Amino acid sequence: MLATTFNPADKGDGITLSSGDLSVGHTIDNQNRSVRTLGSRGSGKHYFELRLDSQGSTDAVGFGVADSAYDVDFPSMPGGWLGGSVDSIGIYNGTGWAIWTFGPGNVEGVDYLINDTGVGWSVGDWVGFAIDLDASKIWHRNVSGWYGNPAAGTGAVFNLTPSTNYFPAVSLLNIADSATANFGASAFAYAVPSGFSAFR
Image 1 (cartoon, helix red, strand yellow):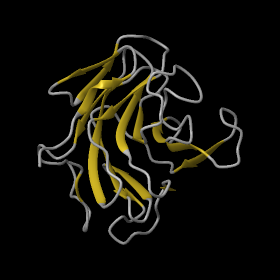
Image 2 (image 1 turned 90 degrees about the vertical axis):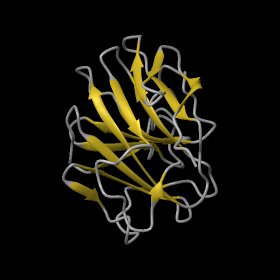
Image 3 (image 1 turned 45 degrees about the vertical axis):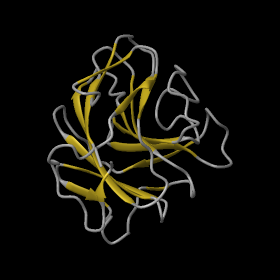
């Protein structure tokens, strides 16, 4: 099976794709826009990597996953940026390694669940993601290692919505923001956790 790519027909206004639809750029400043992949998964254990290629001063490049209801073109809350609604989870390199998601029972656009793991990354770094869709869990790592242990099924950063198909996704805010994905078409930067396979 061929590895997936980002979907040219499923991206926000201003988002550009290159390098075989694996690299993402932006042509509009201060407007959150996102892109999803061609393929989604609703079961199994999958791994993929995203690399921060460049970023503006706001550190508003979001990595994560989204379902089919997530609005890739809404410029502000509750869409456009990953984690801005119940339909997505986004990871941002701000004051630390923060993950934002809309929490059940909260006021959408006001209250968000935040899990700051305190570990950041730099331009040129790959960030690895392991998603166990049977257990509805997600983990991520940087050059120093995993936050949690996906192989053991422990320490997940957040629980995903059960029985939901998820797409890897990226959101950008500025023209200076860009990123690249690896879904398994080439060698990964890190070892795939035991029990997981490339997101294809």
